[in-house]
Length: 204
Image 1 (tube, rainbow, N blue to C red):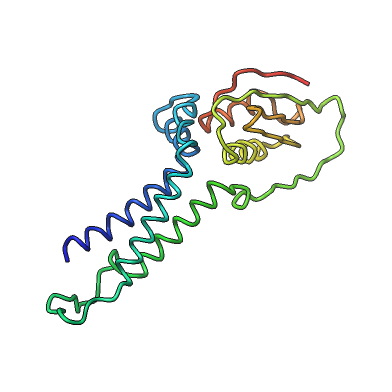
Image 2: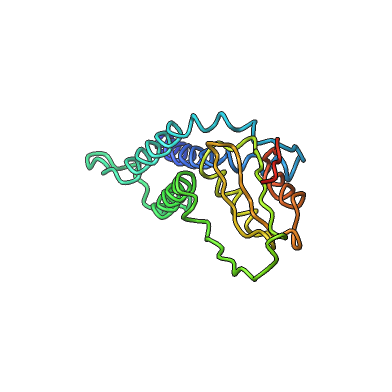
Protein backbone atom coordinates (compact mmCIF):
# COMPACT_ATOMS: atom_id res chain seq x y z
CA UNK A 1 0.00 0.00 0.00
CA UNK A 2 2.81 2.41 0.91
CA UNK A 3 4.59 1.62 -2.36
CA UNK A 4 1.36 2.29 -4.26
CA UNK A 5 1.00 5.70 -2.59
CA UNK A 6 4.60 6.50 -3.42
CA UNK A 7 4.05 5.51 -7.05
CA UNK A 8 1.07 7.85 -7.32
CA UNK A 9 3.02 10.77 -5.93
CA UNK A 10 6.05 9.96 -8.06
CA UNK A 11 3.94 9.67 -11.21
CA UNK A 12 2.19 13.01 -10.70
CA UNK A 13 5.42 14.67 -9.59
CA UNK A 14 7.19 13.43 -12.72
CA UNK A 15 4.33 14.68 -14.89
CA UNK A 16 4.47 18.16 -13.32
CA UNK A 17 8.27 18.33 -13.55
CA UNK A 18 8.24 17.28 -17.22
CA UNK A 19 5.47 19.78 -18.05
CA UNK A 20 7.32 22.66 -16.38
CA UNK A 21 10.53 21.66 -18.19
CA UNK A 22 8.72 22.09 -21.52
CA UNK A 23 8.76 25.85 -20.95
CA UNK A 24 12.06 26.09 -19.11
CA UNK A 25 13.82 27.20 -22.31
CA UNK A 26 11.64 30.34 -22.18
CA UNK A 27 11.22 30.81 -18.43
CA UNK A 28 14.76 29.88 -17.44
CA UNK A 29 16.41 32.89 -19.12
CA UNK A 30 13.85 35.26 -17.59
CA UNK A 31 14.50 33.88 -14.09
CA UNK A 32 18.27 34.06 -14.46
CA UNK A 33 18.11 37.58 -15.84
CA UNK A 34 15.64 38.85 -13.22
CA UNK A 35 17.04 37.07 -10.16
CA UNK A 36 20.73 36.58 -10.90
CA UNK A 37 21.23 39.31 -13.50
CA UNK A 38 22.85 37.11 -16.15
CA UNK A 39 22.35 38.81 -19.51
CA UNK A 40 21.87 36.61 -22.57
CA UNK A 41 21.17 33.57 -20.39
CA UNK A 42 18.82 32.09 -23.01
CA UNK A 43 21.78 30.37 -24.66
CA UNK A 44 22.17 28.17 -21.59
CA UNK A 45 18.70 26.65 -22.09
CA UNK A 46 18.68 26.10 -25.86
CA UNK A 47 19.55 22.39 -25.49
CA UNK A 48 16.20 21.78 -23.78
CA UNK A 49 14.37 22.20 -27.08
CA UNK A 50 15.67 18.84 -28.33
CA UNK A 51 14.23 17.19 -25.20
CA UNK A 52 10.70 18.59 -25.61
CA UNK A 53 9.21 15.52 -27.37
CA UNK A 54 10.69 13.20 -24.74
CA UNK A 55 9.50 15.39 -21.87
CA UNK A 56 6.02 15.41 -23.38
CA UNK A 57 5.97 11.60 -23.61
CA UNK A 58 7.23 11.26 -20.03
CA UNK A 59 4.59 13.71 -18.75
CA UNK A 60 1.64 11.89 -20.31
CA UNK A 61 2.96 8.40 -19.56
CA UNK A 62 3.32 9.44 -15.93
CA UNK A 63 -0.23 10.77 -15.93
CA UNK A 64 -1.47 7.53 -17.48
CA UNK A 65 0.23 5.54 -14.71
CA UNK A 66 -1.27 7.82 -12.05
CA UNK A 67 -4.77 7.40 -13.51
CA UNK A 68 -4.32 3.63 -13.59
CA UNK A 69 -3.23 3.59 -9.96
CA UNK A 70 -6.06 5.88 -8.80
CA UNK A 71 -8.92 4.33 -10.76
CA UNK A 72 -7.95 0.65 -10.85
CA UNK A 73 -10.35 -1.70 -9.12
CA UNK A 74 -9.16 -3.23 -5.88
CA UNK A 75 -9.33 -6.98 -5.49
CA UNK A 76 -12.37 -8.16 -3.54
CA UNK A 77 -10.79 -11.15 -1.87
CA UNK A 78 -8.50 -9.25 0.53
CA UNK A 79 -9.56 -5.78 1.53
CA UNK A 80 -8.55 -5.79 5.17
CA UNK A 81 -6.04 -3.03 4.51
CA UNK A 82 -8.18 -0.96 2.15
CA UNK A 83 -8.49 2.74 2.97
CA UNK A 84 -11.95 3.76 4.17
CA UNK A 85 -11.16 7.32 5.24
CA UNK A 86 -11.52 10.18 2.81
CA UNK A 87 -8.14 10.68 1.09
CA UNK A 88 -6.26 13.93 1.57
CA UNK A 89 -6.41 16.58 -1.14
CA UNK A 90 -3.05 15.58 -2.61
CA UNK A 91 -4.19 11.96 -2.90
CA UNK A 92 -7.62 12.74 -4.30
CA UNK A 93 -8.94 12.26 -7.80
CA UNK A 94 -9.64 16.00 -7.97
CA UNK A 95 -5.94 16.74 -7.46
CA UNK A 96 -5.07 14.25 -10.19
CA UNK A 97 -7.37 16.07 -12.59
CA UNK A 98 -5.83 19.41 -11.55
CA UNK A 99 -2.39 18.04 -12.38
CA UNK A 100 -3.72 16.77 -15.70
CA UNK A 101 -5.17 20.19 -16.56
CA UNK A 102 -1.84 21.82 -15.63
CA UNK A 103 0.11 19.44 -17.89
CA UNK A 104 -2.30 20.06 -20.78
CA UNK A 105 -2.06 23.85 -20.37
CA UNK A 106 1.73 23.73 -20.19
CA UNK A 107 1.80 21.63 -23.35
CA UNK A 108 -0.40 24.13 -25.19
CA UNK A 109 1.68 27.05 -23.92
CA UNK A 110 4.84 25.32 -25.10
CA UNK A 111 3.66 24.38 -28.59
CA UNK A 112 0.96 27.00 -29.27
CA UNK A 113 2.02 30.13 -27.33
CA UNK A 114 0.03 32.43 -29.60
CA UNK A 115 -3.16 31.09 -27.99
CA UNK A 116 -2.25 32.73 -24.68
CA UNK A 117 -0.84 35.99 -26.03
CA UNK A 118 -3.56 38.43 -26.96
CA UNK A 119 -2.83 40.37 -30.10
CA UNK A 120 -2.51 44.07 -29.34
CA UNK A 121 -4.09 46.20 -32.03
CA UNK A 122 -2.77 49.73 -31.99
CA UNK A 123 -4.57 52.65 -33.51
CA UNK A 124 -2.09 54.45 -35.70
CA UNK A 125 -2.19 58.21 -35.44
CA UNK A 126 -1.15 60.22 -38.46
CA UNK A 127 2.46 61.23 -38.05
CA UNK A 128 5.37 62.44 -40.08
CA UNK A 129 6.83 59.52 -42.04
CA UNK A 130 10.30 60.75 -41.20
CA UNK A 131 9.58 59.86 -37.56
CA UNK A 132 8.99 56.21 -38.42
CA UNK A 133 12.08 54.02 -38.23
CA UNK A 134 12.54 50.31 -38.87
CA UNK A 135 15.30 48.36 -37.20
CA UNK A 136 16.38 44.74 -37.49
CA UNK A 137 17.76 43.15 -34.34
CA UNK A 138 19.67 39.89 -34.56
CA UNK A 139 18.82 38.04 -31.37
CA UNK A 140 20.75 35.15 -29.90
CA UNK A 141 18.95 32.54 -27.80
CA UNK A 142 15.59 32.15 -29.57
CA UNK A 143 14.89 28.45 -29.92
CA UNK A 144 11.15 28.04 -30.49
CA UNK A 145 7.92 29.80 -31.43
CA UNK A 146 7.43 30.55 -27.74
CA UNK A 147 10.52 32.76 -27.87
CA UNK A 148 9.05 34.59 -30.88
CA UNK A 149 5.80 35.29 -29.04
CA UNK A 150 7.64 36.25 -25.88
CA UNK A 151 9.75 38.87 -27.64
CA UNK A 152 7.04 40.21 -29.94
CA UNK A 153 4.56 40.50 -27.08
CA UNK A 154 7.06 42.38 -24.89
CA UNK A 155 8.19 44.78 -27.62
CA UNK A 156 4.66 45.42 -28.83
CA UNK A 157 3.72 46.76 -25.39
CA UNK A 158 6.18 49.64 -25.78
CA UNK A 159 4.45 52.90 -26.60
CA UNK A 160 5.51 53.99 -30.09
CA UNK A 161 6.09 50.51 -31.53
CA UNK A 162 3.81 50.09 -34.53
CA UNK A 163 4.81 46.68 -35.88
CA UNK A 164 6.89 43.69 -34.77
CA UNK A 165 7.87 40.63 -36.79
CA UNK A 166 10.04 38.06 -35.00
CA UNK A 167 11.43 34.77 -36.32
CA UNK A 168 13.37 32.31 -34.20
CA UNK A 169 14.44 30.46 -37.35
CA UNK A 170 16.13 33.59 -38.68
CA UNK A 171 17.20 34.67 -35.21
CA UNK A 172 15.96 38.20 -35.79
CA UNK A 173 13.19 40.68 -35.08
CA UNK A 174 12.14 43.49 -37.40
CA UNK A 175 10.58 46.36 -35.48
CA UNK A 176 8.90 49.51 -36.74
CA UNK A 177 8.53 52.37 -34.28
CA UNK A 178 7.91 56.08 -33.90
CA UNK A 179 11.17 57.79 -32.92
CA UNK A 180 9.26 60.59 -31.14
CA UNK A 181 7.90 58.06 -28.62
CA UNK A 182 10.60 55.44 -28.21
CA UNK A 183 14.08 54.46 -29.38
CA UNK A 184 16.26 51.47 -30.17
CA UNK A 185 17.83 51.38 -26.72
CA UNK A 186 14.44 51.06 -25.03
CA UNK A 187 13.47 48.25 -27.39
CA UNK A 188 16.75 46.43 -26.80
CA UNK A 189 16.29 46.79 -23.06
CA UNK A 190 12.85 45.14 -23.26
CA UNK A 191 14.26 42.18 -25.18
CA UNK A 192 17.33 41.76 -23.01
CA UNK A 193 15.15 41.83 -19.88
CA UNK A 194 13.70 38.52 -21.11
CA UNK A 195 17.14 36.92 -21.13
CA UNK A 196 18.00 37.23 -24.83
CA UNK A 197 21.16 38.65 -26.31
CA UNK A 198 21.14 41.19 -29.15
CA UNK A 199 24.18 40.70 -31.37
CA UNK A 200 23.63 43.07 -34.31
CA UNK A 201 21.46 46.12 -34.86
CA UNK A 202 20.68 47.27 -38.41
CA UNK A 203 18.62 50.29 -39.42
CA UNK A 204 16.48 49.71 -42.48
